[in-house]
Length: 347
Ligand code: AMP
Ligand code: MG
Image (cartoon, rainbow, N blue to C red; front, side, top):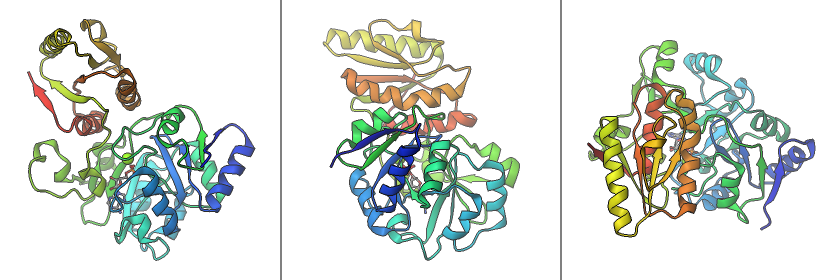
């Protein structure tokens, strides 16, 4: 299959993309979080195609993207008051709500579940595509299952050239980390996946919020089943083994430098994930800076790009500094820990 690559700066690109979606094809497009791999959410056969293209297990449901808040009514069997309140505060934006699904939504899209995940993205390209096509777009992150999510069209092309109908290139995304997933089917809403809409932000609006215990790193060895099926899979992983080094900054740097030296002796190449503040501290490794600690947003934005870059640099192993797990840091560490398969070195 030829994958058309079109810049999202002209009318014709949207017309072409809309037509593909209407005919049951797949179009990757930017959102403010990461690129999505989109198809008609109300067509179970299209959902199958999405799973197949991604190599995604069919029990891992897709998020449905809408362009107007009231479109929730078409997808959810019932919309509780608190969903409207959240939509008022956070939509368009990086918050996905889980609600009981309406009959229109096929089980293909929900991975067999009675619930549906819905989000209104805050990106002009995504919103225009949904509106122009008149289609509710099911769009998981546009990466081959298990790989780091795509934050640029180039990443999507790397994974899907020849496997999907079109990539709509809208440049680099703004946030770089997937949406917060919030389950509203429980009495107390549950965070199933942390994201840029933080627990504190949700609590300010709704009161008590809990986090799914199964996704916390301290419970990784307990036999708990995450409520978001996607959270049980290894994810975001670069090809080389990744270890997070945590502890006092100076000790972290010493440890990583020692590993770099030991590896050099063995003829191995070591990648280092660091920040603007610390990048001068490492000697002899392949050092990549993901952003600034002063501005957590830059770290979220740079994470997947750097993980993918290391695949091209063919390093033998990667060490990453760790980040404080406050507000947005929680989402950053969640992704980094999963990418590392929870390999964490405390120094
Ligand atoms: P992605 O599409 O790659 O951003 O991943 C979507 C995430 O939302 C995955 O972790 C899914 O398992 C989760 N998800 C989607 N729909 C549901 C649902 N109905 N119930 C629980 N989790 C869901
Ligand atoms: Mg994903």
